[in-house]
Length: 95
Image (cartoon, rainbow, N blue to C red; front, top):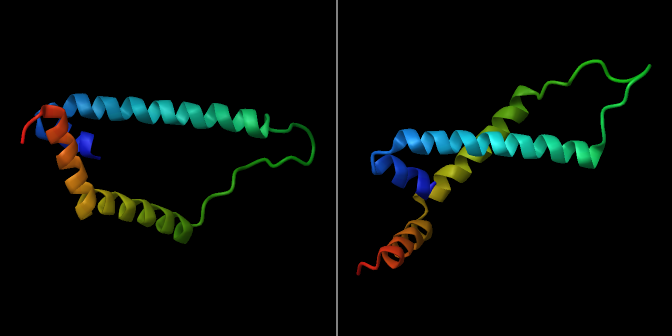
């Protein structure tokens, strides 16, 4: 999140958004290929499932809420902000 915030703060938000989109595509491809390697191809023939199950709404809200809480804690947490500031000062060499 620090890299994303820095990219938008530096005025290159469109580049940051494009990079995040590429990361999302890469992650989707990795999940897709890895699941086929680990779980095999879907079975064919009689008796196989014909449709996918939908995730119940309360479960979806709980998962999305947990992810949002993790993002907020990652951005707002005091030790993380200090760590990012110190890393930036070390990289730039400013004190």
